[in-house]
Length: 432
Image (cartoon, rainbow, N blue to C red):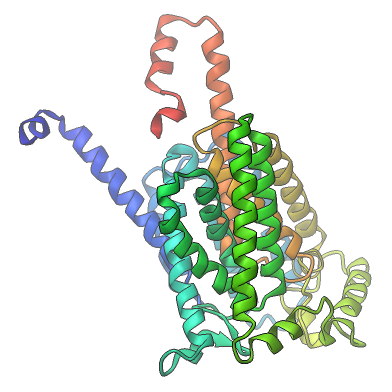
């Protein structure tokens, strides 16, 4: 083995070492994403440094990713313009700095996965580990498992290492969906290993008592199962999907009924399960503020400034579309709407294509749809995992763009020199 190592050129050894360091650096960043108790969180500080270093040493942005970059930057320019409408800036510069950082984080994840698609697996594994860890903290906090555990709860709901259970719950949806995918498609021998982390994450979602997270996970699971069913032409596989889905639903119902017997759980569930809460339909409740806000947007096309709406009406917008209008103006609103429609359309077009990265795209895409749907009822513009989802989807879009380009080049006769260049850039599937 040592003799073989000595035969390898130093450039190959260095390249492998750099690849390992880069992968480890990204894995650490994903692990930190599950711990956002205070701001700026370790995730922001670490990822800002990582993105800066990567940019200095050759961050490559594919042509297919440029729309993501342009639209996110345009949205933040809208926020800067809206800031000029404010009499008191307060913490607005910091807020917009975080917004811009998150935008660049989406571009970063899209860029690195489009260049090295093997990173998808690492990112998803690290995300699962982070989700299990923060779920355990949230569950421990909910049950007061140790002194001081209540710091991982808020409003008597599990919040994990997050400031808000309504962010904690949605954060867990992608890793839960990914584990469900592995459970449905993997070998039977691995099921017990996958069932335990899936159970922990599902419990974290449940004890967050976030109606949005419950709905997101249910919708993501249904969409994932439907896509797997449609994608496969094998009757045996389809039967397996149906049988396992029925078994999973039955087990969840049993677990749900058992959990409801625990003291206090039934009352909290009954309260949170109601579609309409008191703060929704009050005189200046969430729904009333929607109408007020959209009228205000017609009077202030440049917006009124980030976070100003909450200072006027006592509560934030709780609607990403209204928030875009108020905090980022019409420029930000149009940019975010265009980005959303573009992401949904471009992702859907390649969703079921047989590619090495397709499982990761499928899980990220259904989770992204859930986040956008939930954004109609809550502000999501500063959710770290939303920008990670954007990066994962756009990374797959860029990979497909490159894959199709290579296929076109392969079909066209080219000079010998060009053929040698194409051979050096092997198909992306070879990276797996």
